[in-house]
Length: 225
Image (tube, one colour):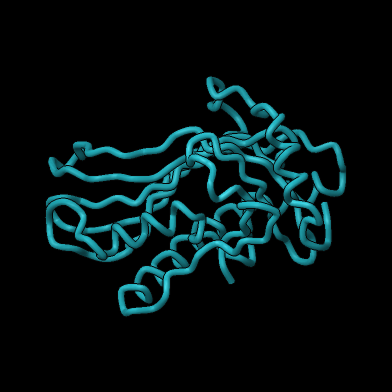
């Protein structure tokens, strides 16, 4: 827990590179585990594969760079030049004047066409991360940009499974018990709204935000602003 930004993100990233997951992925059911799926409309395209320069393509770039996160809730430090899968991210959660560093690791890149229950098909691109040791939560989040190939509808879909981690500090444990789930749902809503705003603005000609290089090397801070 801190009240200022992380003083040495390069050191923090080196530390979490040695961390393991803080949970068993095979045991994510039962009491205390939350299963979420939230969808946010980003826009519409012509039916068929994603249109160059359309909402799907714009959103894909923003999701890759973690630009969808609401800065007032979450920031992330990571190596911009690292492969997506295996990328360690030092998240910095914010609550009031406090900041909480938490490590996650990208485990999967999603890039597929699949059948929907309504008989239509959809194109999906995205990625997921799992929580590492010393994180306040346990679990996995999947972020996907999804286009219905039959209707042209483009959405941002967040799928999560999560549970409170073991927190030794009694003050933090109490605060997380009271505000953790509320803040998590707020993050889901804010991420969808932010991504939709950015997609709309870029579609109108605004510059695409790019994670800010803070050094050393290729370390960046996202989202921008």
